[in-house]
Amino acid sequence: MTHTYTYLYQNNTNMKLLRSTFIAFCLTPGTVAFTATTNAPSKKQYVAASAKFTTQLQMIGLDSPMGGGIPDDEEILKEKQFREVLNEINVVKDYLDHITEESIKAKFGTGTLVEEKGGEQTFSEVLADKAAAAGSGGDDIELFGGGGDDATSTTTDIKETRYQPNLRSDLGSTVLLSGTADATLLNVLNNNFFGQDNIANFQFSKIKALVDDVALAKKSAISREARYSGLLDKLSIEPSSGALPTAAELDGASSWIAQISSNDAPTLLPQVAELAMNSNELKHVIVLVTDVNSNTVDGWEAFETASGNGGNFQCTLVAVGEMFVGGKEGGLYHVGKMADTTVSNALSSGGMPSKEVYQLLGHALALDSTAGQALTACSYSQAAIEAVASPYAEGEFTTRDDDGNEITDEMKEVKMYGRMIQGLREIGFTRTSELDVLVKKGLEGFQEFIANPPKREDSYTAAKSARDEEDERIMAMLDAEIAKDEAKKEAEVAAAKQQEIQVIAQQWAIKEYSLRSIGGDVDPSVTEIDFIKSVWDEALVEAEKTYDMINSAEYQKKLEKSADDAKGSENKLFWPGMDPLLKKKREKMVEKVKKQYMDLLSEEELEAIILSE
Image 1 (cartoon, one colour):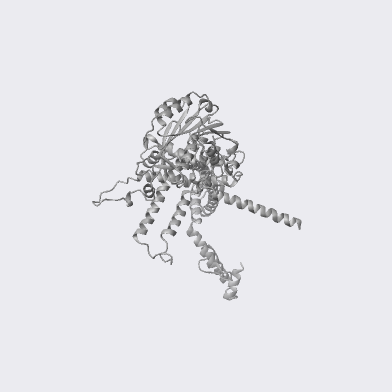
Image 2 (cartoon, rainbow, N blue to C red):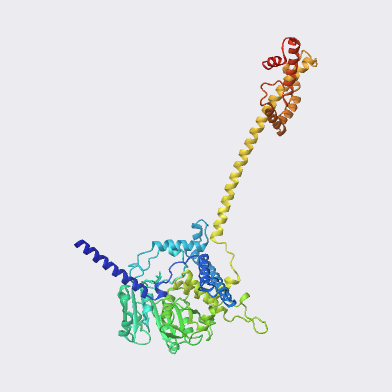
């Protein structure tokens, strides 16, 4: 009874733990908890699934009781538009596959995954296979921890299937935050939060935040997640002495993230540059400038100049408009170089969710591509988001004015940018890799890919060519062996033929010697051997004729016919098709027997005597 109670108690405890774990997982925000960490299924699988899904939704019921009968022109147009958007996303996925393969080659050398697989699969399929294999083996994941004690542990297989961004080096073990202690940014820097992709160069053992209100900062930062993820073991929240830290407060920090407003930027950015230049340990500085409503930030030039093109320190500026709490996380946003931005006020929402901003800020610290860059970020307006749902206004979907003139699609770049965001997330790029693609390659890289598709002598083609060459070499060897065997067989057949011809020639010469000797055409002094030698050439000619004759199809048919005619002729003297020599011999025997026994024997008795001979 005691054992039964213990078993039930343990079972009940396990179920409670399982239930609480599941609830905690579900309550985690969707784009954090369910962020893909490996490449998704291949493009072909996605297209088939998507096409099936939309057909079931939008084209429901030509005969279904749930449908409205035959779809009208508007429904058909929507279906075509949806499929065209899928095709456009697939072009993005081809582009992302291309740059992923390039990054893997640059990271791990010229050998590729496809070569390891023997060239039997496409690059996307190899990525999907290896990612699935790596994921199935996965490391242990703690309740609120990314990977237990070793936050940076990822398998080699996962690394080899993913886009490989260039990460900054020498981030050091201490990062300083001034002007903010946002929980989202702290979780990114802690690099050990459930559902969050670990960043390889984030190995901070101390995170120091300088804020105006320490109590409020601790209240927002200290949580159950912070305890379980180990953040509290690293985090130090201290009161700030001003808008910027002092040189003493910067002491020991190798990375610094500062937040200032656009109004203070002209004054504070030069001070940030001076503090960074005077620090012997500081190597990386990222400044977030808020409430920016233009494509320029005063003070950036001085900040960039002081960095010495990365010789003194690496600088990055991130400009955003209004930051607000809430908003759709993981929505459509724009990030790019501030001087090159083409996002108009009509397309921008004028701000960005604070959570998105701080995630972007943390990931920007990791990337080498953001060093020395002034970036701007904003969420797209609702009008822009709605436009992204439609295909490019080209070809079948071209829009025209009342006079029939083609109207330029002013939203095309926004749509292309939206396709890139969607493709990056469907394939499973990490947020760090996503930011690297948007900053390093940008929309220009995708447009260049479309305008000039690379002639890819990819690993699959190279492996296929190598296999073809090897196959050709093997086939040449086999052909040589076959030719050698056929030549040997032909030589054996020719030798057997020649031997048979010589036997026939010998028999012909002996027969001729006998006939000519009886006819008196051969001098009695000539021996058989001498005669054979004298007529040997003629004998060979006749023997070859005889050989050809007895091996001909006509002769074989004649033999078969004779055999058929001879069936049942055992008790007959003569039958149709009998051998002429045999027939002549029996005729002479009949004539001879008749002369001797004409008066004594009947015809039947004469026949029996001849057959017995």
